[in-house]
Amino acid sequence: MSTQARSRSLMRGFYPSWFLAPAVILYVIFFAVPTLVSFYFSLTRWTLFDHEFIGLDNFVEFFQDPQLLKGFTNTVIYAFVTSAAKIVLGMSLGLLLTSSLIGRGYLRAVVFFPVLVSTIGIGLTFKSLLDPFHGIVNGALGAVGLPQPGWLTDPNLALLSVAAIDVWKGVGIATLIYIAGIVAIPEEYFEAARVDGASAWRIFWSITLPLSRPATTTVVILSLIGGLRSFDLIWATTGGGPGYSSDVIGSVIYKQYQAGFYGLSTAGNVVLFLVVTAFVLPVFAVLNRKQVDL
Amino acid sequence: MNRTTQRWIVGGIAIVISFVVFLVPFVFILLQAVKTAPDAGQLSFRWPQEWVFWDNLTTVLSTDDGLMGRAFWNSAVLTVGSVTIMVVLAAMVGYVLQRRPSRLNGVVSFFVLAGLIVPPAVVPTIWVLQKTHLFKSMSGMILIEATFGLSFCILLFRAFVATIPRDLDEAAVLDGAGPIRLFFSVVLPLLRPVVVTVIVVQSVTVFNDFAGPLYFLPGSDNATVQQTLYSFQSRTLSQYNLLFTDILLTTIPPLVLYVFFNRQIVAGMTSGAVKG
Image (cartoon, rainbow over all chains, first blue to last red):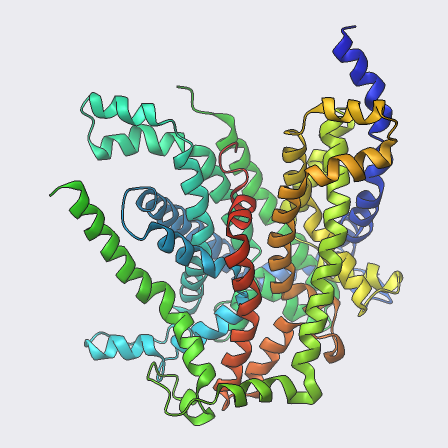
């Protein structure tokens, strides 16, 4: 045994396992237990005091009731649209804000700030900005003779409008992650490529994009998780409406909870759990598998 | 076109676009917050006919027997309490995980990641809170927020502990420090940069959390700032000035933190971007 290994094993007693205990206790009581029992209670008709086992009825209802099913499909659409937009815009803004231009510090700050602002506050503000009759967005569109859609009141448009607000609020974090990723690429690669006469486009495809892959992985995973779990913003802007056209699983869980259908609400939670793991785990595996070698 | 002109042109265009896209909503909030009720009800971008910000502010703070003032207090208690707990507990976990590799580490890492990915089960959590007599109580809400934030903090602490040389631990032990002294008097002070990052990032997260208090801390006595914001809009359809004053008030704490801790916030939120 080398001296270093010996001193390490002597030190073990100074890193006691019970340091983990308080965190483990909180985690088990308030996170692990609720997650585990949710699988059981999702199979019951439940009043919190009393429950009756009803098998898969809640899940059958979830996938047969058009309103609940809509929440499910909307969740998937919402997560995809917001993630895709955050990757493309985050990457573009990341490139822009690492290039040489005036006002870079200001631009970084202003793109990022919405991330820190309360989602409810942002939602209510945009509800006013996008008001079909008085809102300044439609006012501006009308002034230049463009159509003035009911952003949050048209059933076909509501979900996408909320997704757009989500991107507005969240793109700052994707941008920052890309900036960190791009800055970490060694300058020599770019110099070598320029010496070889590579075009800006070629440099982007062959160097920047593949080498900022860890950033892409982080952005994809963060925005997928955030998008699938979204609730606050939708609740503050449309409340799932008009009708149930912009409901997502998060709002379905809340509505069923409010209505006192605790078993059904918990089934919604289980569905959300399955959807999140079904999307995030493969992405995790695929994106982490192949690290780029250079 | 040479590089300097390009710098100015591209930057100039970006700045103009940023005004329209990112600043207009905030200027809009400010404008409505200083207007009178009928003026703000127009939802227009026009200059205020009359400046009544102080009236709006005092009205907002005194509505419902000072509900807003109480809500700010509740949010502050919730934020300070839960962030304190999660910082101390997560630092202890991150430290032991990094310093003492064992077979358990894989299992712990799995649960840490699960904590980041898995959405909390709502009604079962309420069920647990009822069984432990913590439902609708501030202490229960503090413990819930602390639990939900643990995973993120543990990851940051573990990464940072790795940068502190082990020789330091050994020197402290030779000087007679026990495990508790070693951690709290030697290691924890050295973790200060990451402690600041965690405090700032998690404070913003807890302060802005809406769904947590909505489910686990109902009741107007316990209302947090986000709750009052939401309930405000349904009651004050004709009083947009008050709604936007309220929005403005809830935007100030994160803004202040951002101005002072810009670097730490950015570091915390982009961790993992380079390593993957």
